[in-house]
Length: 413
Image (tube, rainbow, N blue to C red; front, side, top):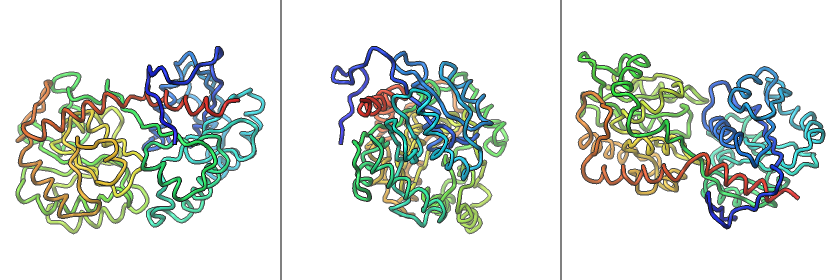
């Protein structure tokens, strides 16, 4: 395992006189990105303006304009087909030819896969090992595809980037790894994810337009517990619904907000909501635009991220950056990042999650408008909040990009 120096660390990589000629395959990033897609967008945004990086992006043929707007200094080549099977075939057949002609120093596959036959050094990001650890959380076709992709990357990539030590340890447990492994935590944009709203009253106005059910008759926001993320089995949202059902009677003013699009297996969430008596106070608001996510997090009485497993758990870090009380799961990558800034419960433990929600709702703000000044909760909540803000300041996308550059330079030459 490689210890990665932080920004400004004198032991960091020695830069060559010429910028490193880096290409990144961004063809897998959907129009509404979450998870790995968000990671790719943020990483490219951090790398593109750097004077020590000469960046080229490979996009879908119908997706060039988005990336040109995002990274105007990069060369953007729309070469990949849009459909997944054709895109994966292009990565193996077409991309190696493009790489050879473009004079690339190192290529980055940011989503598990890589061109298997190319003379250009390759770095691959392995986000998690859930396809090995818990294949029942995924569609069978994806398990077959990504198990093979991760195994190939572990053997053939010059270096592997993992977003957490948890993921790096699992990679070593499941695969023979011939390349060097680098741990590079994700970052958070603290200009957007911060505890103070940009304009007083702006969050309430934005959230009222997003979901009218968040606002009471007097125009103030209801208190609410919020989950942000795709509704898929490993997020364990049904368990959160059941835990909320256990405490909803004691907190009649509180809503549960499920913010995220349906993933594979979302039927279990619908069934869990239908089974609790407090179902009318559970609001499923779907995919939330990026601009609204910080407002949702900093206005929440509690942010709950009860995922059974994650490679990193970016929503948890974003909640800390917004100063929100966070409850998440122990023994996971979220504990690695958040530590004592979050309240930790065992994965899948409905009673423990309900008890923590009950306690945090008892001690949290009692409703009313969420103003433009910082709130200072009392007791342990205040201490956790301060630790969370300190953690968020250290986790920037600029620092993550610097850590990726260590991996890129390790395979060049």
